[in-house]
Image (tube, rainbow, N blue to C red; front, side, top):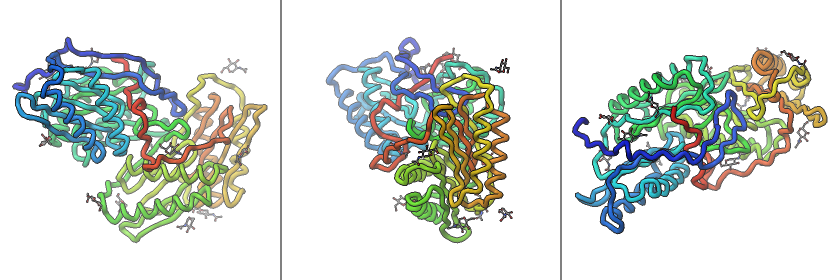
Length: 488
Ligand SMILES: *[C@@H]1O[C@H](CO)[C@@H](O)[C@H](O)[C@H]1NC(C)=O
Ligand SMILES: *[C@@H]1O[C@H](CO)[C@@H](O)[C@H](O)[C@H]1NC(C)=O
Ligand SMILES: *[C@@H]1O[C@H](CO)[C@@H](O)[C@H](O)[C@H]1NC(C)=O
Ligand SMILES: *[C@@H]1O[C@H](CO)[C@@H](O)[C@H](O)[C@H]1NC(C)=O
Ligand SMILES: *[C@@H]1O[C@H](CO)[C@@H](O)[C@H](O)[C@H]1NC(C)=O
Ligand SMILES: *[C@@H]1O[C@H](CO)[C@@H](O)[C@H](O)[C@H]1NC(C)=O
Ligand SMILES: *[C@@H]1O[C@H](CO)[C@@H](O)[C@H](O)[C@H]1NC(C)=O
Ligand SMILES: *[C@@H]1O[C@H](CO)[C@@H](O)[C@H](O)[C@H]1NC(C)=O
Ligand SMILES: *[C@@H]1O[C@H](CO)[C@@H](O)[C@H](O)[C@H]1NC(C)=O
Ligand SMILES: *[C@@H]1O[C@H](CO)[C@@H](O)[C@H](O)[C@H]1NC(C)=O
Ligand SMILES: *[C@@H]1O[C@H](CO)[C@@H](O)[C@H](O)[C@H]1NC(C)=O
Ligand SMILES: *[C@@H]1O[C@H](CO)[C@@H](O)[C@H](O)[C@H]1NC(C)=O
């Protein structure tokens, strides 16, 4: 490792802050994640000549990596022969769909070609991927030399929990199939990831992550929102969901996966696929339904919920997206994912009929205005009384444009009215404790939801899933740019 040539001189470091977007909020919700923002490249000083063999090799390498990114989240390759041999590697966030990964790598290829134009070594980071090439063999070499970035708003971190969770996944990630692990926290949301490039051994990965975690502790732990990017591994923690590219109309608000990992092509995974197909089909005729598939130990139970008066096609599109997104986010025996307008839950253990109130809250991120008015909570309180007695759907809503009061209370259909009432009352108490001064709040739990907004959230028109089937967009490259970075 010490014999390794210094591949890049610090004087050649280029950091272009084109602009950044404030992605951080103490709450989750409609954060404006605009496209292209910040590119963090690191290029060598040495150049190659235009129309040289090296250039041809590099272009061939790029097309090979682009093609590999359509079926892997991290891979490496080489092109040519000494002295024009070029080594290349890419890394996509572990949960990214292959389509999204390839789109990100294509963006990165144009990005690195511009930022590191005619350089013999280059490295570029985006929100969802990283691309690196060099005339020096770096495969398998741990390079933890990177940079820290923090939430530009610098909100103080009061809890030690995010760092504790990160310390845990930093030890787990090296032993996962994609050297990738995530965490989620509630009831105030927080999300984290740790990941290494695929060329490292598990031991190398451990070493890399331990190094950047220590560096990150030194600089950033007291801020709510940070990331540390190095050539061989990265970690990131944010109070808002960032694990898949954003869909503004119907954002992923939270997810939670527990239990053991299930194996690819296992009976459990096959049963899960059948369960999801059934739930997608049921979501065209009901806003909430459940099903089960298989026998112990591969028995899987599932349930979905859509906002009570969502159109049938929107409900189905939302559930279809949820089935593909949750499989990208977790390969665990139990999972739940919440969107603005629907949720999907599955488990190897029956959870039907019993209210589970362990969810998350959020306040309207578009306003920091405080209110003393008790009207919103009184309105939702009334809905909480009404919903359990409505059948078959335990859904009650209020729409008062003149008073700027819109609200819902809703339970999953597997509960009886008593359980529904218990669920709604519990989360209403949680809202009273956290959020009633905000103009807009919600509490979503696995078994029931309440939500109040000063503007209508009923007349939504959600786009159908992309032809390639959800997984978080794959369109233009802009969405992959590294947003929100500020070097501390
Ligand atoms: C990728 O890197 C690994 C680890 O160093 C190495 O074993 C493998 O041969 C490389 N793959 C290619 C195609 O160069
Ligand atoms: C990190 O950088 C320092 C100095 O810039 C260098 O001495 C060290 O070898 C590098 N470490 C790795 C793992 O590349
Ligand atoms: C760029 O690479 C050089 C050499 O590896 C390293 O010293 C420097 O810290 C890197 N810069 C960033 C921002 O990662
Ligand atoms: C995730 O689920 C587990 C088990 O049900 C629960 O203990 C934990 O609080 C949940 N975490 C979040 C963030 O919802
Ligand atoms: C954090 O980043 C700043 C700016 O690049 C740097 O000066 C500082 O040393 C970094 N801190 C750590 C612990 O890496
Ligand atoms: C469900 O999965 C957990 C671990 O993921 C396991 O401990 C438990 O025995 C399983 N339960 C059943 C009924 O299969
Ligand atoms: C799972 O099955 C698919 C299709 O049969 C196959 O392409 C893939 O390699 C299998 N994966 C594993 C890990 O066995
Ligand atoms: C759905 O849940 C209800 C209530 O617990 C239960 O009676 C019903 O059997 C479940 N449906 C399926 C298909 O499992
Ligand atoms: C489903 O996902 C696609 C692709 O990300 C998105 O365009 C669409 O709006 C999503 N639909 C819903 C209902 O969330
Ligand atoms: C409602 O469901 C709960 C939990 O399953 C059960 O304990 C309770 O007896 C049920 N109440 C009625 C009235 O059926
Ligand atoms: C709202 O409460 C604050 C104290 O929490 C008080 O200073 C303010 O006067 C109140 N405003 C109204 C309109 O009651
Ligand atoms: C949904 O409910 C709201 C509030 O009750 C109502 O204004 C709206 O028209 C309903 N939408 C549909 C499609 O039923």
